[in-house]
Length: 74
Image (cartoon, rainbow, N blue to C red; front, side, top):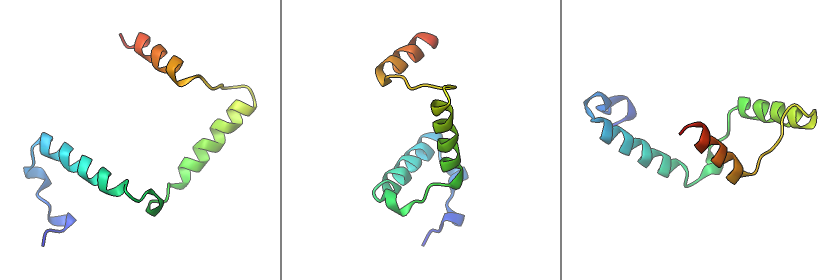
């Protein structure tokens, strides 16, 4: 049986490594409640909520934000 520590990752092509990552993500995302977010996620969210509450940041409509990014990176 192959274990994580014995996977021949160095022998895989970049394409195979990407496919492996996709398979792992697909598998993990089947039960998202099994994965607890790290504490720093909550800290960042609290900071961002405070910034909005204090007027230092604001929300943008998703379609408008995507368009702004498209224009910026043309």
